Length: 366
Image (cartoon, one colour):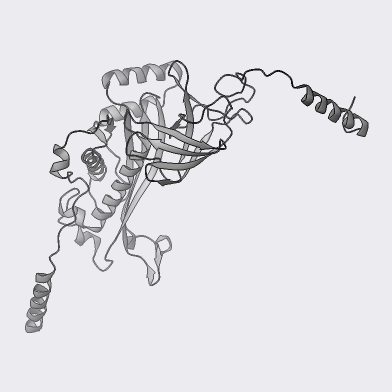
């Protein structure tokens, strides 16, 4: 038996000599040194404050720092990606979250105070780790199935809200998740007994790989939601006032399948949402795909003819209100500012003939 064990070990060593394995790099790893030393791009990044995430109600391991560790890992992931200037501040995030419960003038004053404390901060991210499990420990009825039965996986999920301090509102909420293959023959307790959250070895475990996938998903979605402060999405061409092409002043195009909203700048440079005068709904821009440096989409809703689509702005944030009274008439939603045209005698004659035929047929009253 001992000889067999030694023979097996020797075979494994010889096998391993030809294929060296490595640990999985954490998502917090820094960009290549040449990128870090290169001149900064000609754009400004947004400053984002990340609060300390809440721990999951139940987890595969009894770690007390899952929430705090995940928010720290997210902050480092975003910072090293180069798209955000990131800070972790639990107190500041709690204050922003608490301000959302206020109303009216009290709410406005509280957000004024919050903005004064951190003048450069535009966004605050709060949330919780909701799932941190191996599915082998969950009921079979809720596991994902494969061709050979239920899958053995690790799943990590993060729920978060994005607060815009300038608007004083939650502008996005999401629930991102990641999964990774797990060996159901190894007890979870034994697998993580000598591992701590965020350690280098942790990222090579099933929960570590699932965490990496969840963090990358959050990062990608935030990159779409939060454009650099000097970046704009703009319509560069329009066909039949319905099909549009959108270009970004940064490297981030609008996401495929995303729903965006049409805005314009008035003469004073103030951005205003564009509404369909017939329905009162904000005009949407729905992205269908991309081709190189532009994204293709179509409008849902008909903007007024006074709105020049080429050069109009596209924003991911829905306007407030999303629906307004169609009877309201101003230069952002109606055709009221179109120049009056002189009556066409031929057109008037045709209209009068049509009204005469309708009266004769009894379709309308006198």
